[in-house]
Length: 336
Image (cartoon, rainbow, N blue to C red; front, side, top):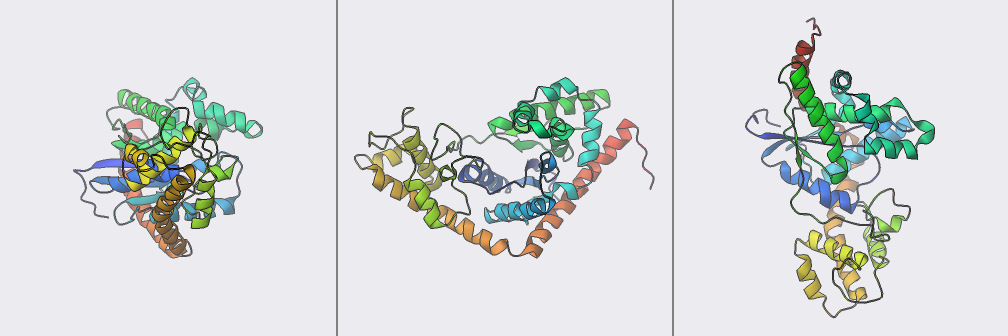
């Protein structure tokens, strides 16, 4: 990537290398990341350090990093247009997290919703990493002095603590960190489970027929959509009491880049069978090229490593500039 991007806003977002991307991830996050590559200096991190807060197998973690990077590339994240980096390959994340942790009240961490949720789910494996997670996340963002952070509703609390810590550091030492702003897309349907349409589509859904993965083959996508929960009324229209049908309308509208109203109009008076077939056709048309690109990329470890190495080197240059200022301001010495 070109280094001459000083006039562009810096975008930073990260994701753990855990499992496959689903349609909700694709429409709600990754497509927006792709669009932001034009006109912004983008850093997209695969955060493997965050992935070790719960029990894991090291070989699986490495495999998941390859798969995560390959999926992002298949979705359109071009390593020539953005910096796709690996968190553990960039020195400074953990160092900055320690410095920020020393000005972060422990009570603030104990109140974090995600910590409470994970502590309940992993009661037999609660470690200090789970508690410290938001401080490392703050370091991930502040080390790049990011202007914008694409976030979902469930991550807004983490961005608030990031802004709090940036402000506290700036007040304690001197202005150093940009206060990052959340980037929440103006439009974009909330994609729900096909089997439990009151809940968001999720890779942890106990009924995997409710989740459409970007790597699912056409016959699998079709089968999941044809078995999607609807209702007994038989009319294709959005309504709070028709969550299953409303969800399918939103999926079709989002993928076909048309309004939900136009979908309702097209299928007025037609049955759910016709409608589900049409939804399946659109989903297959849009996701099959992504799956095919993924299948071409994933065997090529050299290609994936090259992309991550290039992105991590660019990320390191920016992180090192920030950490040089931080070390000087907190009183640490650096010997050349």
